[in-house]
Amino acid sequence: VGVLGAVGLVLLLYTSISLIQKIEESLNYIWHAPRPRPLAERFTRYLTVLMVGPILVFSALGVTATVMNIEMVRGLMAVDVLGQVVQAFSRLVPYLLIIAAFTFIYLFMPNTRVRLWPALVGGIVGGIAWQTAGWVFAVFIAGSN
Image (cartoon, rainbow, N blue to C red; front, side, top):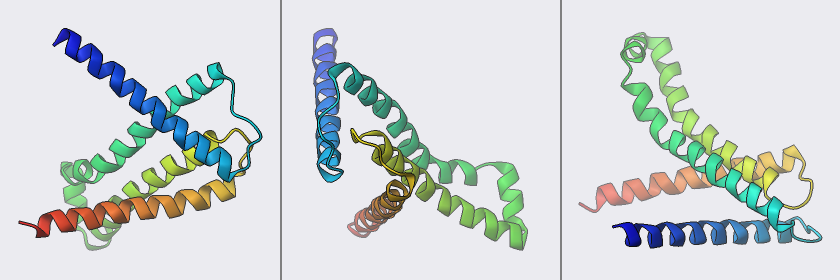
């Protein structure tokens, strides 16, 4: 496990960094960035994206299940108006977290200044598309039994 684990870790890091580098190159092309960042700055940005991105994505995946299992939330669900608000909020939060992740990437990755509004619009479109694709995939898998 020692050597195999080390090789696996090295390959995972290589794959992750290569993927983020391709994303950065694509965003630099889209935003007409004049040149790539210096290597040290790229490394710190890549490390930040590797830490923040998964936190937001996995939070989006787990928030609904976690919130619905809290006893206080179940009590609020029994009240008509509050139950509807909690249910709407629990459906909306995953979208908001994914939108935040996409907006963060659109603001943070290109080697040029990106204004908040275009990054937010891209984050909204990308986040809704991501969540919709996840929903379609879940329906497909559930229907394939």
